[in-house]
Image 1: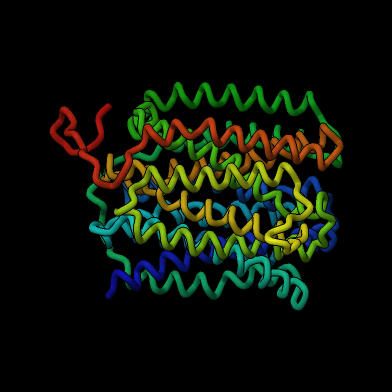
Image 2: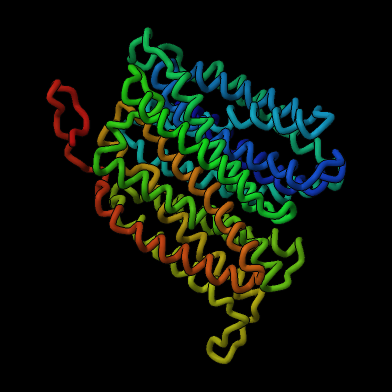
Length: 470
């Protein structure tokens, strides 16, 4: 019974992070006017959180492998809660962005650490319970915009950050008493690669800042400044790769990334993040620009996707051992690809058996079907390759999350650049959606390089230890 309560506690932390992220997006326009800041500066409220979360995921996975899951989870909860308090108290945009960075460090650490905790608690049903995490984020995506919108209207934008505090205290108290203390079997003298973390953070920060500048339609397109940012990011990435090859405890195990299944899984997650997460996050803008929906309607439009994703991911999680990994990923990805093509065609209605379905209702149906695709593929993609190195669940989860999150950030930035450059929003969405569909199809061969099912044979390493060997 205790382990089910533990699963509930870590799930509550993931739900809290999901609600916070979506509710902050709702509060975004009000923050701009209340803090008297520009859209460019306020954009970092969202992008800084996404960027830091991307970097923290592999670091969090590494830390939870070295130290105890319990200590790591408690630290992440404290950082998230403290960051939420500072967000609510921030008197200006600069302190708010800094507080969001602290909040992102905690939020980015939840998923890898939670995966490690669940793997320890449910060794015989790890696939099912890690897969169930996929149904938690859609719940937050439903609650966040609706609850956040009401709270901003009734109590102001600071209330969406205060909301996190009591729930954070509950998670902190329960984790303190329920999670197991002690190490995870790793060398207590292992060192953390802070230099590698700093180089990785600097490199991706420079790349993201350059893309942000290119996508900044209000301030124009500062090509020279963006070019310098890309050059800096490239230089730091080369130094990072050089350093990681020589680090005793690297932040990212480059040898692990070279192995076929892991390379394929991370390549797939990067592309999936670009197309299925990043591009689809522009759905409200698409609905307003192409279908002339109101802001309220465009927000509600995300609800059927979240509900469908929650149902599909729960169902897939329970049958994952029977179905395996490959077919859910393929079926889900093809559904998402088909939806991108339909989005690109921008249908204005359809006749079904003499019944005319209007453009608005049709769009809701399309978004709901897309949610089925997301929910079908995500649990399998979350679990693929874990069996190859079960002693590094948190590390593998952190890497997967980093590539998927990085892809999502890239997708939004690149799509924004294309939309700005083309000028015609409808035509731009046509190009972006078709390009995303084509890119997803290109990623499908990578699925066949991953394990087909949880029942994989794990060859021994030369050292005699169990684990994947190339």
